[in-house]
Image (tube, rainbow, N blue to C red; front, side, top):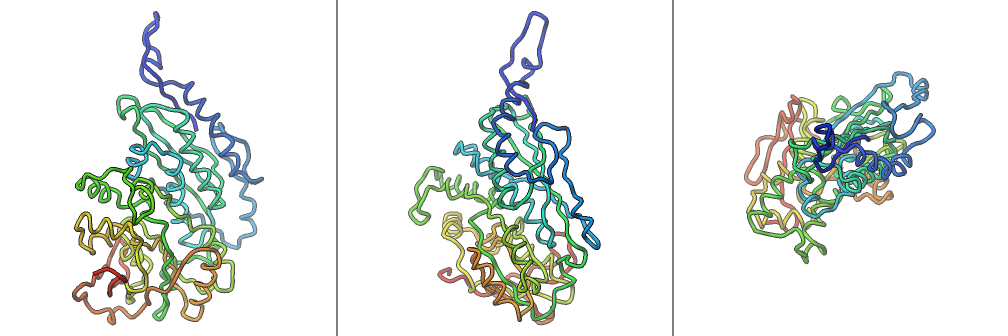
Length: 384
């Protein structure tokens, strides 16, 4: 985590780096402010400390694997950052970043091992950068993943002084014969949905457009939410990794055939990625009620349900496709860990899905995966 930002200045000798808009001293100050939080994610497997050219991780434990597979993922948090900037709250975005990355890794059954981050900004404000990285470190701690390095880059002239963006990447490992995915999914499997913490980190261009069109303020207190609109919008993405790894280590977890992280594209498009050809999943909207923020946005923007479902998670942030005989044990295990989960559908032969009727949505071939289909049917309780 290195970087820079300052006011332009000239010296008698000419233009300095600071005059060009880059202040390395501010970057150094940011590193000092974040060091403790980053170090807290390090176990004995992490070699060296903050400031090295490369993060080092002792992976000798992989020698005990029969056939270790490395899993990697990278992501950002999109335009949710605009709300953090508007609210001047920067210590939650980091957890969003971690969730978006590590929960893609756990989907294949892998344990995240190490993560790195990248922050680009128009001007380094040490306290702001430290807040962002502290959030990343907190997210890594929740996921049991070491934050082993990162970079803060100042881009004066390319970005506004208070603009920034974040991205991250992580690597994990899974035993080859424990790999989860569509190859394991069978007709009769139960689809279990796990509650999201809110909007997570997808669909914020739609959210912001609705808020702007209604001339709503982020500091508006909304009774249905019990807090301000901005506080609701900045609710950190739930990190499922720790709970799912604990589940997979149990007898109940042996029945989990596939996982799907509900991100951009919504529930149907992401679930379709782990449904094999020849099969389909029928999802009953009546099995759960999305949180108040989803119905409020739908009403404020007169957004069609199909568009909401293709953009937002609608209250389900992670899905497990599970053998029917272990579905109850899976939901009980997750609930025992404080993660509300319930059966929301089943896997059937593709022909049994038929075509979408009135009020239904059928998604196939999503995200470039030539797999099965997902039919969204029924109605959420309390939704017309």
